Length: 368
Image: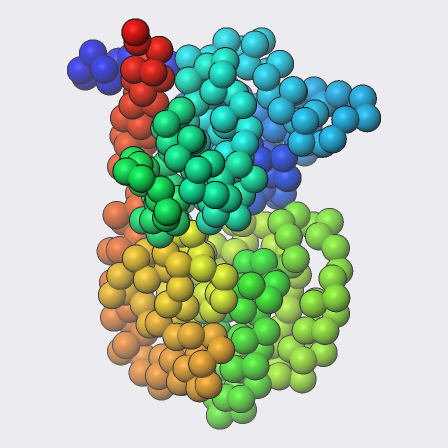
């Protein structure tokens, strides 16, 4: 290992989760799961307090949030600063909070990891704000789409791309494929859950041997609330013959993907990465995704593209796959090969490099 590699491995790293992200088994969102996959045993992870078992990656220490009547954002920032002063990290990694990253960069080297459109985030909404961030700390995006959004309207800026990843070895064994079409994820309009129900309502009666399932809720965790959207969607799903299971643990989602013949990701929202599509490909399902955000880059030629609101597009893609077993098999094989590019070993090697780059970047700012 090179000197730089040894230095990167020995870094004391504090990872700060977004305020709503729970670092707990059965309650974790996509960011927490990603952090857990990549964390070294000596990494410290911090975020809101949890009541269940923490995820296995790193060492989780909850933030101590002040009871003073300050704005929640301010209290969270103060708690993060207190955690940093206690741990004395060589590097702080902040996920999805540009304003918090900029604040903490006054006290330690910081790496900002963006999982969503930065132009919608506090502290990064304007080109001037994004330029300031790029001048102060190392910015990383989970996809080329995120990096391009960050750079819009700015002068020359450098944004590293750190794709999401998954442990391919944890993918369930492939089961005999069931004639089931699966939607897995947050059941909200942005994710196109209603487009999936509409499409199945139009074509499901033509395929009596097939079933359709929605696994998920409004948010992650078994305590996810009922929402007006869910209350509106349930009777439509029942009428269309779509089973809605509600929230399911991540391991159960992967099992369902390993059994389903087809997984649909009909997002209207420009997905900054599209973890559901990656997991479905790794599980060997034939996949349909929307041609928005980073989804086309993630799936390459290993999936069909279909706009959720273009008349007949999603319906046509579903019929094509249900009619052609050979095409489903071909896409399943291509998907597994594509997903292997996003494996854990490659991601961990890149993580070490980016951490060292972040520290070097900060040293360069401090140099006379």
